[in-house]
View 1 (cartoon, rainbow over the protein chains, first blue to last red):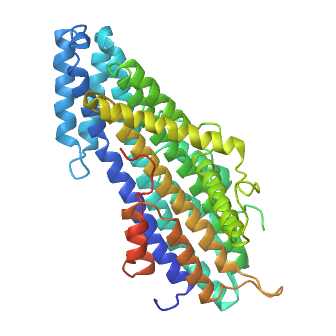
View 2: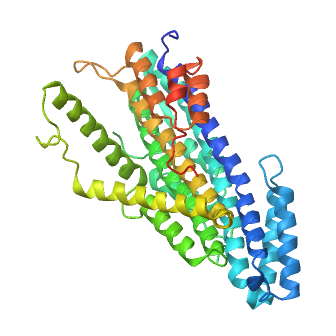
View 3: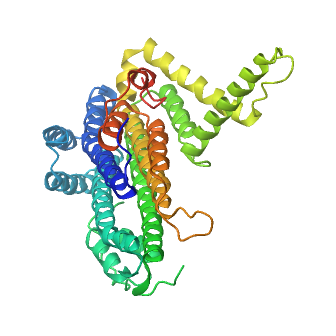
Length: 191
Length: 236
């Protein structure tokens, strides 16, 4: 049996667990590019399917698989390389109609995975920011006197840790202090 | 609770409660959004798989996916309902047996019909899938990308759900009010009990290890290790 904890100590420990859970999900997300690579393998093993794909389409699919294999796994995941692959696959999809039905789900999957990884990373950073920010406020409660809480500053600090308009829209729903922003196109463009 | 003005000078407990309440609402929405992202990853793998997986195997896989990740009812809610129902049945059966009742004749086991059908349907489809895999290793290879994506989605849902539920349970313990007095931190025995309860919610081996190492800061007991089934029905 461990020594009894204070509420603050318990929160700090749970914050570590929360961070570990998010990191685990991020690593799994990065590793799941291997599912796309395996699907391409399966596809290439189907002769009747492959016969309908042009030579250029086959070359491009093999190149995509090589890139995925180079970057699959948590330690090897490279967002820049994956984004570059997405762009080249988008070009291929535009040029070769016969592979569009295969290429488009691959592009979608890579985009969704990358966006998911980003969102999980941001949640991890934001939760850490919250537990750090609340500490002096909680300590002030122990002293019994009034304590100032800068909600706008807190919301702005959270907003800096986001990478998408959708995340900031969520923040704005709960922190009306945050000003609205001019919409610009998100870095992730889905079909 | 005060309105959302930029700077509020109030007793700390009010500000803290509001800060926590608002951040937890943000966290829940962010997590829901992330889980939706995991689901979209699986859907795109299904689209890709449909280009080469044999029709029968694909239909079975898709049915299993739709049933397991039911869109009409939240997965955790559905699983919880099934688990609650099984727990209730188990408790009723134990109590009935202690009283010397014939539990089948006395109608002690009265599982809700809808829950029963759902549980049986999921189990039957899983058996069908497992049957396909055992009979044909080629099919196993074909559906593996979709299955691994489903496992990833399932595990992400579970871990994120446990994180949110944990925060939701721990934060209010800072504001336990006793007999109308100023709210204050819950007694340490209650905090300890809360940690132990959360430990029971963890499902996968890795998650349980993380919880014991980081929160309880003690080794995982053997009985917990032995009782850990991996936390998912998606084991192939």
